[in-house]
Length: 317
Figure 1 (cartoon, rainbow, N blue to C red):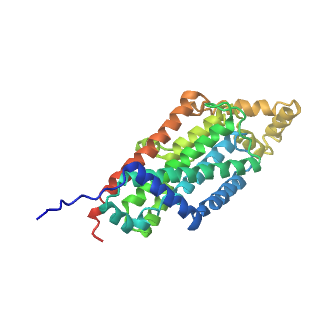
Figure 2 (cartoon, one colour):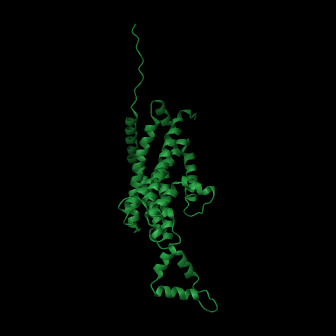
């Protein structure tokens, strides 16, 4: 009697599995309307430019408002890209994992595909900024071109947010839980960005864990925040120009004399010199450190996603 030795089934290696899943995701992009994230991203970018106007990268106030809004738009786009991609096919992933799927290959395929989506969204966003006549600095900090530096920053912010959402999608078990978590993640990014709210004590440390903080700092440095005028002081003086002191209007007189001498722009630059920030200096170490921080965060989220999905077989649902 001849005994037949049972052969263990052979599965594709990680690289082959990654390629298979990348192909699957691109088919979903075409046939399951995943391309809709691009027009949605375009609408969000258009709203941002409409709200911020054309003062971004022109005045310090406009740059603060504009970079905050643009960063939030990038974070939203990234969240929307992948917040449901894993949990909506969790049962399929579980079966394929038991059949030999490498979780690292599955996540790597998602990373490649999501990078493509984020790159396309970056091109769309840059295009809308150009159409809206946003004055992006001609000269970059890291590269010779400002538009390339801004584009790289937008890509990194969007991709980091995408990887955070992918991580959440691997941790939670239902699309409902994922969509419930997304608003809280977005609020966390807004509040702890350090852009509009003064953070002190432990909150000051929390901002370093947010994508929005590093994105704002990078865009502000590339946009030459410290070289821009500050208009708040001038506008405040204009508001009180008709206040009378002993029957006279001293502020009105000073403002008129300043304008007649053509010194208004000099005054705005002088006031801006008192609101400069070391973090916004347009230097290579500054911008490079912000980009590295975003890279670190997105890789950290990807690693946590792999670890979380490793335990999918314990899901008893």
